[in-house]
Length: 312
Image (cartoon, rainbow, N blue to C red):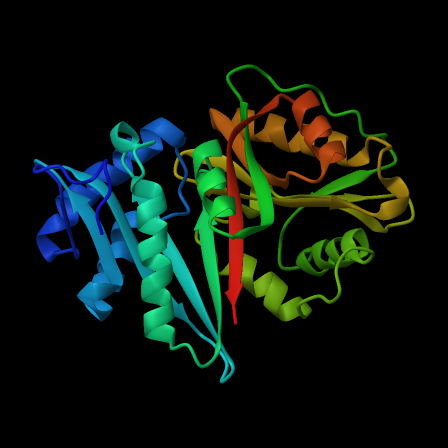
């Protein structure tokens, strides 16, 4: 494949090689410096894993000691009638807006079709943990549909967070073997009007307990005067950052300051523990929650998103 921007003598398009690991790390670092630091994606690991399956599942533009762009595909568990394929890729910040992203996505789609076979439905999936406006435009222009998007919001803990204003009638408890079922009850009651089903208690609790980064002493449950758990915050850490895994309040108490007060309490505890900042994800279609987080001092750092395209 060639274009006006890519017919340069100093650029080579080829499959990845094991020796490219250092260049992949450099590319990953450059993208995170430009787009925002996040800890979910694994550019190096995912690209090399795709190469190990088959070198033709990877495609990269190489210059003088630099990876200008890289892409890869991963076949996901699928059914007899549908093949799901994850498309991954990055373009170095210095080489964006030169047509590399569009060309890379075209190649990824062609490779996904070739590997999947044209006799069944192909569902192509893109996950981007640090979405840019340019990337969004490329995806949409290529026929991909946004499925969901979440903002990563971060709050500095350098200064003491606002005092929690929970009424004295609420009792706060930490996560423990005894209180975990109460957290689960608060979780189900908080989201019963938004979720079609819930994982069993044992699975929900077990996923938290088995997470090495889960912080039970920083996870809080609000219990009202009738001994009903009505709001919860579960917490963890990502690197040196504290992290709000999940928070919720029963529907009848939404907008009454209970969740706000509980979060403020959690932030103050993070501050006392020594964390310098705390982050969370919130759906971009939840302006009420975004506004409340903003009032607590959170600011958007980046946006993560998922796109899909179905080919018949």
